[in-house]
Image 1: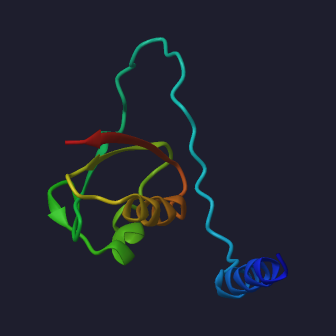
Image 2: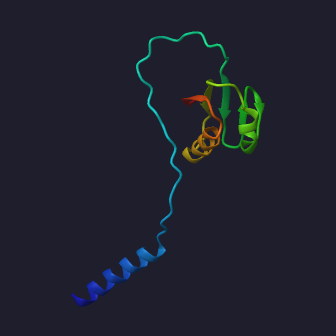
Image 3: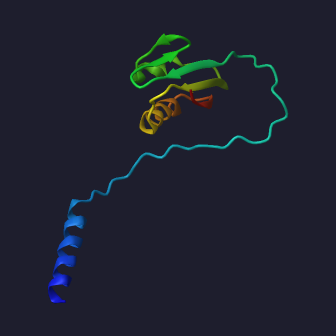
Length: 113
């Protein structure tokens, strides 16, 4: 019985020393609510297509780090984000962190397909 307690203690010590405690970035998500119907927008929406290795803004490829400068628009700019097959949750989170730096965006994320 004593040797079993020693093994459990060693395993507990091993897992405590090998685990990492780091903080992750938080991305604020809001669920869609009940709407009254779409009113015609004064500003046309931006279309953002996200693939595994590329991001295209209105059909032209843009590096992820230069996306904030390319999207600098006026207030209340709607953005439609389309995810291609193979896009990971981490890739989407990286994109949302970049988009959060641009003020006045209304982001809608479409499903994969």
